[in-house]
Image (cartoon, rainbow, N blue to C red; front, side, top):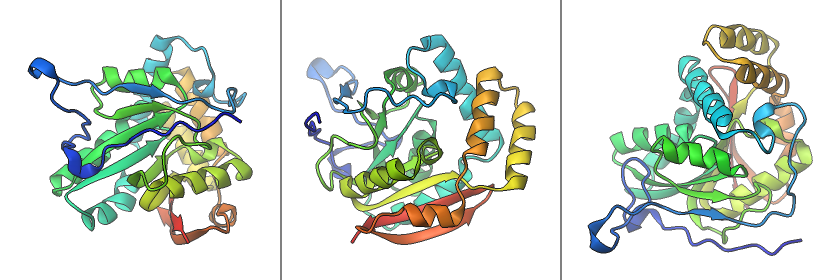
Length: 269
């Protein structure tokens, strides 16, 4: 197993900005661009044969278009609403500056929405975006999403214990089976001082039917329709979610969210 690389994460009180910026003055007053940090992984091939965006080697233009469509689908189908409802109340109870880790960040749109909403409530977030696909992180950078980007495996995060205030994932959980999700939850809780949240698709026959129907009306292309159909089929039921939480974690909250989502909050015992 490859050794873990420890990445120093700036705490929220070190100068993050309202949009989740991780920037500092550079010599000569030039704008500082956060680096993309690549950490070694002990599982280079995480491909699931089904979803196209999970595959390695896709053309950057194809990835950028698909991630843009996914962001549009989430916006039109109220996909950001359950994330904001689950996280904003806890962010509001914390200090003015906080650090959040977005696991499986993709194009960074969900973290960007969260940072903007938090800023309107007086909470400035430093965002750390983690994804195993470098091309996804580059899309986020081209879109102007301000975050520290790290290429890493969700099951072996390259951060010290308690490196960030909060960790969260949205629409990542359904990509994995029970054993991997148990490891991911443990890692999310390990690196987060205050707690870890998962927001994902909730298994529902009605939700699956409605989701497949509505995706077609968003103008999404074939990759987004294909992956959306498989994602809906892979949604988790509430009891299955509760059962996957490991013994070392405490379930703080597990609840249904509109539309057809669940949110799970855990922390280390």
